[in-house]
Image (cartoon, rainbow, N blue to C red; front, top):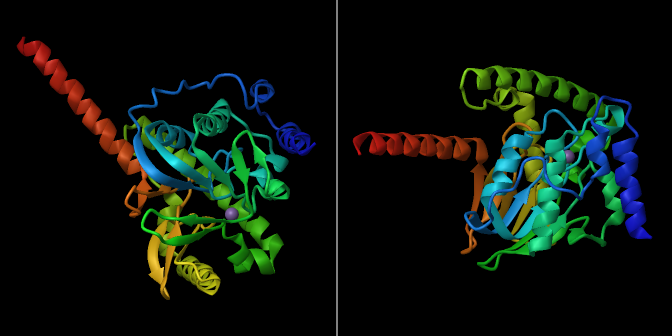
Length: 309
Ligand SMILES: [Mn+2]
């Protein structure tokens, strides 16, 4: 019965739009084969744990190309989806669900099938999934929050973080207005990067720039970080992992380790735990750029070897 509710929620979301989405992809959701085939699994970089959040599937802002590349090059024992994975707010307004977004859902479910423990903690944009907390769908555990113990014995609280967003709490309407403005900025970002890609330039984040320039945003971020860290300290944990503010970070605040895994709209970052418990933020645009440069060089060297022969 609960499974029916779950699929009803997905179909209500994916089928209720009036936009120009490609509905033929939805019928196969989440089965079938991905549009972009998955490369072999054995060559992936392995981590103990991976945290990603703020993917915003169902919006143009989602950097699906980079996220697919990320998912195809890394693997882990456990993966936490720390909220705002699917953007229900946007989908309800305008239906948008390209094949690449199905490919991401497909890859995540496939990981669960292969034995990765997947914990999904819905955020405010995918709050419609919070009603399923405590249930398991196709190997994906849905939780309101989770506790994670690192390889070196640190206890971390994992949550999305909108609970500590003072704007969200005090003025929900303002959050929605902000959401619309934010998506306007993101559309601009897509335009800029489309042009950059045409000219062979790498991915560049407009709002990352803007955000770091605006004093209010900086104040908002540091206040959010402090509130989250304080809540973690009150819980008696060693650290906290969250998302929500689209700003990746690792820092100590008042004796608590604060980790934010960032987002896949602008920053394209993930938080990972190495097998010795060491934590790191991966900036995937940079990693991808380095790898592609190395591959291009290898191809050139190969070409030269052929010439020399
Ligand atoms: Mn959020």
